[in-house]
Image: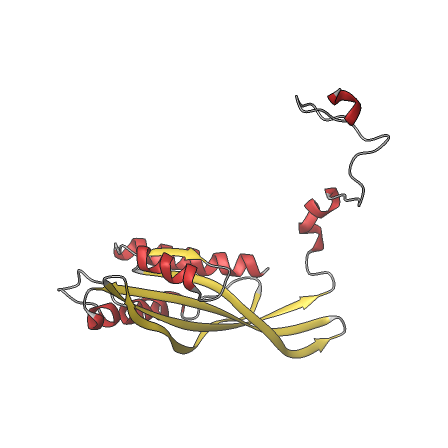
Length: 193
């Protein structure tokens, strides 16, 4: 469910990016703002990364059904040799700044609805995550938080996880009765001799 909603946000941003002819990287990101992401953003900006931030109970609706307020964050990053251009864009539109990507993200995702949602995505806040020089360029990174409401029930779609039916595990590796793997590697100590 969460992956589907994250993908819906990414798809919408890509759709609007392509319609506007913008050269912006759009992708998902599963971690926190750390050195690895800053390095990636410095290399790929202008960029927008979609990430799931979390969810909290909104209310219990009826027996077995719970409503949640989910938060997704769009991490937007602009870069330039000029710190003002990294934030606001510049050079006659040749540099796409972080503020322009925030505006673009508002426009693209405002009221985005999905069949899994009880309430469409709504922008909530913009947070300054990072503004500093990285290497030779300034990097401006902001987070646009979007919330939505969804309901989860005991029968929310576990059948969709059919791949879980085929997962088997054991604490023992090999042993009597274990099938022999097709490989050139020795399967037992006796075969090594």
